[in-house]
Image (tube, rainbow, N blue to C red; front, side, top):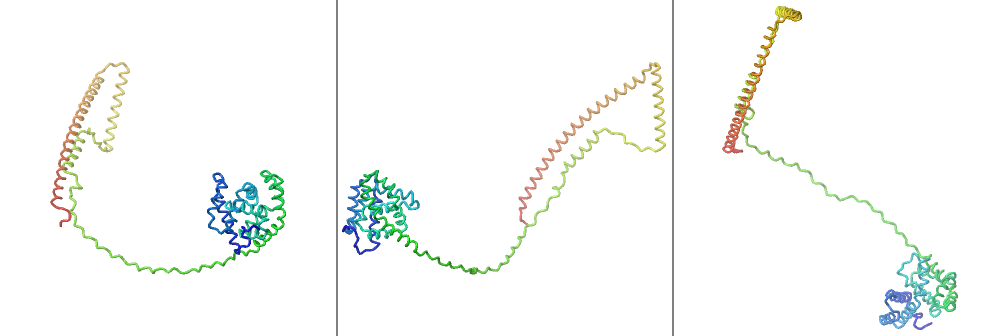
Length: 360
C-alpha cells in the first residue's frame, strides 16, 4: 500500500468522505474546453498546500488520474446514467468517476478494506447502484471492454484493467450484498401521531347595547306667502279675447233655420201643399212633352240661380274679410296680454324684494 493513502490514518469515515469531497470539488472546477489538465493540476496542487501531506498527496494523485483517464471513465459513467442511473443526479457525476477510477486503477494498491471504507463513507444507495452496474461481468466482458479497446490497445485493456476487475468481482459482490443488507435493515422513520386539534370557544367581546338615537327637533319653517288668485285665473284681456272670438265666429257662420216641431194639422197641410206642387209639376212636364214652348219659367229659374250664386260669392268674400279682421284683433290682444304679463312679473319681483323669504 502506498504511504500516501490514508489507510492507517486514525480518522474514520469522515476523513475518507472529506478526501473524496475535495477531489470532487476540484473536478467540478475543471473546464475541459478551456483548461489544460497539466496547468489545472499545478494550480490545484498550489491551492491544496494547506492540507496535510498525506491528504494532499491522495487528492492530487486521484485528481491527476481522473484527468488523465477522463475519456475512459466517461464511457462507464455515461452508460450508467443511461441505464441504471436514470434517477441519479448529474451533480454526482464526478463522484461516480472517482469511484470508477479507484476501482479500476487503485484497487490493488489501496487494498480491498480501504476501498470498502471509502465506498461506505459515501451515500450507500448510490454506491450500491454504481458498483452493481460497473462490476456486472456481462458489462465488463462485453461493451466496456469493447469501448475501452477503441481508446487503448485491446490486449492492454484486457490484461491491465478487465482481468483485474474480474478477479475483484466476487469481493465487490460481497460488498454490494453488505450495502443492500444495510439499506434493507435501516429503520424507517417512525410516524409520530399527529396531535388532534381541540376546538376552543372564541373569546368574543360582548356587544354593547344599542342606544336609541335622539330625534332631532323639526325646524319651524316660515309661513309662506299665499299664492295670488290671478295665478289660476285667465287675465281679463285673455277673457275678452275669447269672448270676441266666439262672437265673431257665430257672426261669420251662416244662420240655418231652426227646425220647428210640427203637429198633425201642420203635417197634413204640408203634405197637401207638396201634393199640389207635384201635380202641377207633372202637368208642366206633360205640356213640354206635347210640344209646349213656354220657357218663361225656365228663364225665371235661371235668374234665381244666378242671383243665388252671386249672393254666395259675396257672403264668402265677407266671411274671409271678417276672418282676417278677427286674426288681426287676436294678434293685438295677444300682444297686449304679453305686455300685461311682463308687467305683472315685474311687479311680483318688486314685491319679493320688498318682502324677502323668512320674514314674519
